[in-house]
Image (tube, rainbow, N blue to C red):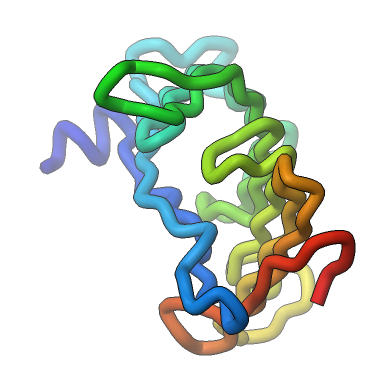
Length: 167
C-alpha cells in the first residue's frame, strides 16, 4: 500500500454519480484511479506524468503552477466495448488544489458524452470557504441531449438527461 500511495502517487478520482429522475437510471458513474510515479518527476517535481485508468485510459502531464495548485492535461482512449477493445479518442483537463481534485472536463468521453464537466466538493472548500459536500455535473451527450446533476451531502446526486435543454 505504501508503494502505491507514496512511490506511484495513486489516488481515486471517481465521477459524481447522478440519479436520472426521469429515466430512473444512474449516469456519470465511474471508478477511476490515477498514478503519478515519483521516479518520473522532473524540474523539481513541478512536472509529473499522469496515468488515468478506468473505462477511460489516459496519459498526460501535470504541472504545479503554484505550490498547492496543479493543472493536468491528458489524452487516451474511452472504451465503448471493453471486451472487443473498441473505443474513441478522449481528452481531459483536471484542476487540483491542496492535493485534491477541484474539477474535471472530458471531451469525447465515456457514456457518449461530447463533453462532461464535474465540479467536486474540494472546489467549494477552496474557493468559497464553505464546508459543503456539494458536487455538480454538466454535460452534453452525442444525441444532442444535455445532462445536469447536483449532490448535496450525499454519495450520489439527483439530475436528469433531456433533449435540447438542461433541467
